[in-house]
Image (cartoon, rainbow, N blue to C red):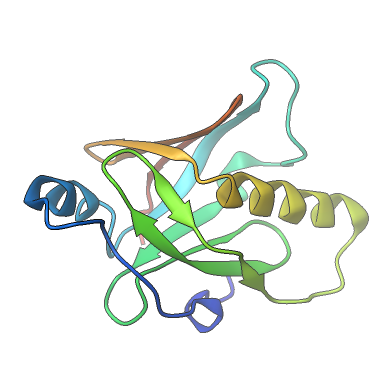
Length: 142
């Protein structure tokens, strides 16, 4: 997979001085996840060919960013992690010439993350929810 760090700009981390929010946000920093399931409106499948191809990472060290990729382009954005929401800035990404169905995956993922999804982490599992769209992920082994 293509490295995501180059596309991520500097930005903000968790909100306010609330140490419990910072501790909760700390659950995500420095971790990478791979999708196990992606749903759109509960029944209609999104244009994601294989959920396991979707990778999401959180980088705090230098850029406090979020990155994601599927089968074509890689994207990144700054993210502000609150107790229950990922506030994602406008994404920047690579511009590979991909097949139309792969471009649809990229568009769906960008829309999903730019909708500031709610998040919930339990152990190695992460659930992201943006309206009727849900992405289940587990921590990546590598």
